[in-house]
Image (cartoon, rainbow, N blue to C red; front, top):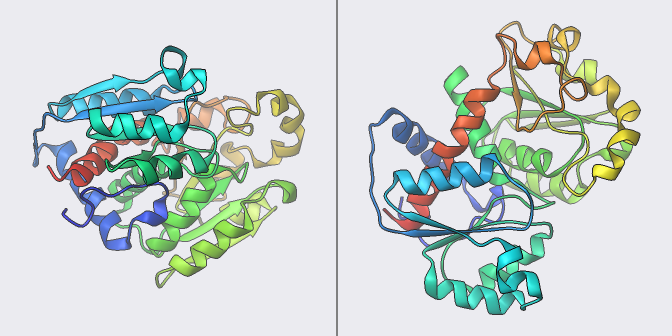
Length: 305
């Protein structure tokens, strides 16, 4: 897909609706074996935050393409010793073909994008998690055949996953409902951006009523109630978020063919019960696998393979 070659993906809004559809279709073709592109490219992983799925899925994806990965752990590079971000960006640009960054501030990605010419991928920031949403949408499309018109209910903290879900839903003409306590809602600027990106059929509902939010929904989706860096708040948040737990009673309020998603890691007994995540409507493991296929498709597109 030549329109994406050489570009940065710092947020889900950096993709058009057509480009997202093409990435998802390519991910499906790669997963099925219909497409088998090869490359000798080098992917850098610069992760300031701990990671299992993102680290392994990106690494497996580039290895399967025939490339190599360099794990640029800040504890063993000059990044961890205070080297200016713009200096690191200009040097890595000379060594790597593509760079995925998992960090706290969105501004760090923006500096890399300014000073490096290679494609920069947002592998998670406090603001957005676009690669996760590509995998989520790939999973939804596998289950229902299309994205437009689907109703997705996200329950819990209005965090980076919720932000990218809202923006992605706007692009794809989906109905997005976010049920969260009033003090934990998504950022207003994300809602405004979604309205600007919106394609026909997009609807956004922000509510503190989880039962109303899941009524007849096609997808129930949740994440941990305290994100990385907020671990000290985890215990205090449990009573605040308890009514937003995806359990059998709440799932029964959704469409009878609804699926359940969780971006993992899951705190079973908190945001989701064991019976639901292990139940027949759970697509959590397909969703986790699709991180690799969706990210592989994104890299193929950005690298022009």
